[in-house]
Image (cartoon, rainbow, N blue to C red; front, top):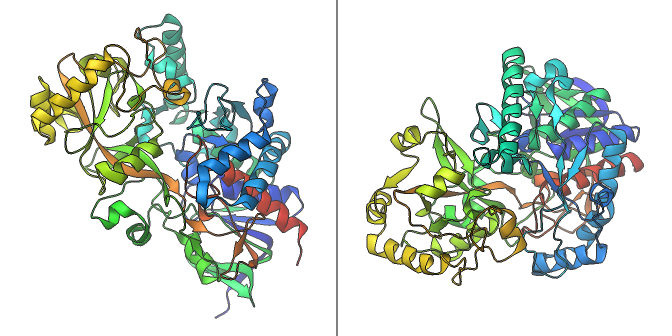
Length: 566
């Protein structure tokens, strides 16, 4: 059967940060690039994310006086990765990460802002940074995309309020303080007024933040460089010329098209967060009968991993964790479907505690989302079930609880839908969530005895800089993460296990080339983003450890393809 043939130098599969970074880099180094996307919108998981990139020694933070040491970053990464460390990948990342940031700021529409107060997730470890390794995409005016704004993947619905993303770096503090600070109230009012104006005029908000801003900035650069972007264009199979990856068969507009790629193919399909077969194989809680929840696009079903394996590559599962674990709660949507809300910061607020099915605390709630789930799966809830975050009336009205917003937003709708549970007493709440009332009372009594003095000797909540960063700096007590749970009524929301991306991926070398079973690169085949195995061996050192390496190794892949014609 004769197929239509399209020729290019480099075929990039996937339009998240990794794929767009590879495409842009290759184009700016002289290659003819084609970018294809399985979904009907571009942006991938990036567009749903917080938009942070973890890049030690980056020039953006240096501009505001935050110096970093490559030796310190190397030491920290070695400790964090432990037995799963890959020094060659770490060195490539430390070398090319800052160069990637400078390249995109200099030559594209991408702009970053520093997070000077955002520490690494384990700030007490040798080599850790107290701030500056995490960057965010600068907010972006969606009108710059013109009509293409309609095909940008929208932000996660549960992370918005009236369609407005309310978590963007330090901005979240203004939203939480809007009823207590005139400055914050004015700030929030201004943001909402602009959002309302844009919604009336354009049908959606145009002030893009977080991962939506990063995806939009990268896409603007793709469009400026006239890189073709095919949507609704899934890859059916890779093609090979001998051992070399030479292109793919792509389904476009109902017909198959043979894409011939002279320099090769970059796989950046977003990992396997929606691949139930690989979940069953690799996720311990799923193997034990538990469920897994991910906000990743439904199209992220492990295509890149499957294509890499078919070409002779192998998926590296020798990792500390197969995915970037995260704490979620399930939110009822209109029409009966369910969304998920990521509990990034509420857990760290004073007066919040997490319990397991025994009614007992099991973790420092203000540790990273990845660490909280890792702790639960180790002992408290091996199947991921029976976890709750609870608080008292003061805390929920001051900070909210998951998808439930703080005062003056009402709680009644979420109570009626069953998202929130409420009890006039702890015993009544315990009955509603199915734990032993006496056990829950004993847990809260033990916690409160020390919490009234700002202490948590059991788990050390608020004990490091990262804990305190997400706490409440205005709290009157001595610890911004600790307060008694004592003001009735009491509230709880069920927590579920999910991911922010998968860590198990194709094993590559430092040039992002996919390796075969003999550890030899497969000619013409690259992987980046969540299709590439975690450079941290499945550990999570800081905010943005997925997107930082994703863009860096996309950049590396694009440069390598441009400089290696054979």
